[in-house]
Image 1: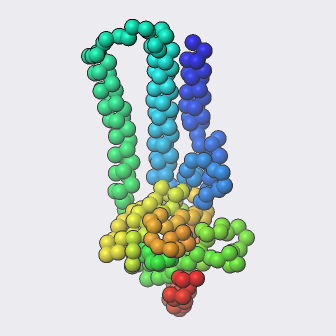
Image 2: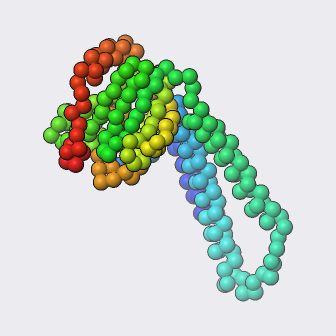
Length: 279
């Protein structure tokens, strides 16, 4: 009886912890990972909000199922051991139990499938975009195009001696993707050489960059700030050194940046070469 009470209290505590939100779980700081963090990075997009919500639901479901199975095992160990049952039961079939353990998992899978397919549809169905950006994966850096504004530039990881105060090691880049807050950004993603993947955890975005194919995804950043990601597809010796930096700004700041970028990137050809990639 004490074991049952303790297990019930444990489940209640876990469920309450999830229900109170992710703030109590030492989640990662906004925009980038942090040491010893647990769970997802803080959300900065509607898709990531839904991903965290769905993960919390699954955590509760997994906990309940695991505790239920543990209780069954304990009951079996206590009540049906050889000492208490010197003459084992000869029962081979129980129709009711077999129906339950067949129907119950089906119902659980249906319950999971409904929000899962809804979330998948939300990720894949791109709303009307306010801005289109093309990301091109290279070994080992990212190139970006703003086709509506005629901008092209490349983003290389900053080396340790190039970092400024506050810039995270292995995540900061020499140029940033700049987008306005609360605007739908359509990302067109491809690669020049091998398969890469463009991923920003805080936006709930991860899409493969495949040579000869143009994949699309989207995000709508809901908070101003700088967000970091990395190539998430093993692509060679410097796979771990092709980060992504997205700076989310107000519409006014974005308009100012756009005026500056049209002059800057139109006048300055890329200084990147093969030697830089092999450093």
